[in-house]
Length: 446
Image (cartoon, rainbow, N blue to C red):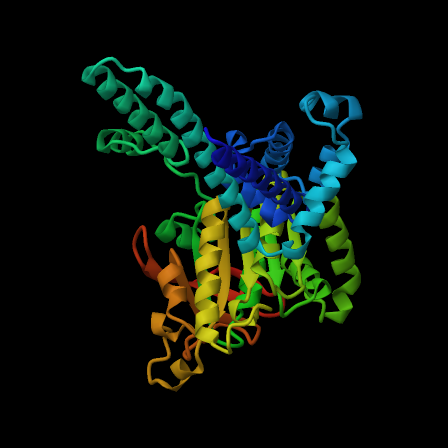
C-alpha cells in the first residue's frame, strides 16, 4: 500500500471512530435510537472495543425493556479498571470517551432518521474495512500465483468471501420454499384472548397478537362504555390492558368501572353507601390490571415506547384507544387529515405486529350514515380515511336500531354488534343489551 493509500485509510479509520462515538451518543440519549440500534447494528460492525462493549450493554437493556436512563447507568457504572481492560491499547478515560459520544450526537438527538443514518454508516464502513482486509490478503497471493489455475482459485475465493461479507449484513435468513412450508405446517396455533362476549368470540375467535381491531360507532351509541367493558373482560382473564382515553379522565373511568362491577349507578343516591361498600369489596379482591392514560397522543414514538415497556416488563397484551379521531400528532401534516389518519393506522398496525400485542382503536363514524334511510353502518362510514378499513384485521360496528324492544326499560338499549370485516374468518352480527345507568353490556335477549 502506497503512502497516499495509507493516508486515505488513516482518514477513514478516524472517521469510523467518530461515527461510532456519534452512534453511541444517540443510544445513550435517545431511547428510540437505542431500540433502532439494537435492530440495525451488530457487534462486528464496530472498529473499537469500546463500541463493541457498549453495544452489548445497549442490546441487553433493550431486550429487557429498560429505559435510556437504565442504559446510561449501566454504561457509566463500568469500573475504571474494567474500562482499561476493554481496550488496553487506548489511553482515554471513560468520562472523556462518553463525553465525546454525547457531544458528537447532541445536535441531532431525538431525530430518529439522523440516528439511523449514522447506524447505516457504521454498517457500511464495516463492509469497507472487511473488503479492504480481503484485498490486502489477496494481493500477495495473486502476485505469487504460478499458473492460471492458481489465479482462478484465488479469484474464486476472493469473490466467495466478498459475497459472504455482503450476505452477512443481511439480517434476515433466506429460506427455501420447503423450509418455509414445513415451518408453516408445524406452526403452533396462535393463542387468543377472549373478548368476554361469547358471540363475538365465535365469529372472530378472540383477539390475536399483531392484530389491529377497529370498533366504529356513531355519537352516543356507547363506544366508550364498550371499551371499558372490553378492558374489564380482558383484565378479568389475568391480562394487563393499556387504556388510552381522550374523552374521559381517570375519575370518570373509575366511576364507570365501579358501576359495572357493582351493578349500582353513582346516580342512585339512596344506594351510595351500599355502592361504596361493594366497590371496597371489589377492590379488596380484584386482580384486574388496567393501565390508564388520558394525556393526548402527540407523538407515536413516545406511544410506542410506552407500549413496548408495558409489553416487555408487565406482559401487557391488549391496548385500547378511545378514540382514533382525537389523536392529533404534533408533526406537520400540512392540514391533510386523511394522510394523518393513514399514517396513524399504518403505524399502529406495525406496532401491534412488532410487539405481539392487540391494538383496539375506537373510531367515530361519519354523520352521513344517519341521513340514509337504512342507518346500519357500512365500512365506507368510517370517518376520515379508507386506511382504517384497509389496515384493520377486524372491523366491528356498534349500532342502535331505531326500533327497540318494547319490554326494555328506559335504562336499557338494544345494541346490534356487526362484524363487518374479518380478515381471517366470517362476518356476522348479534345483539347486546346496554344498561345505560351502569354502562354495562350484557348478552341480549332478542
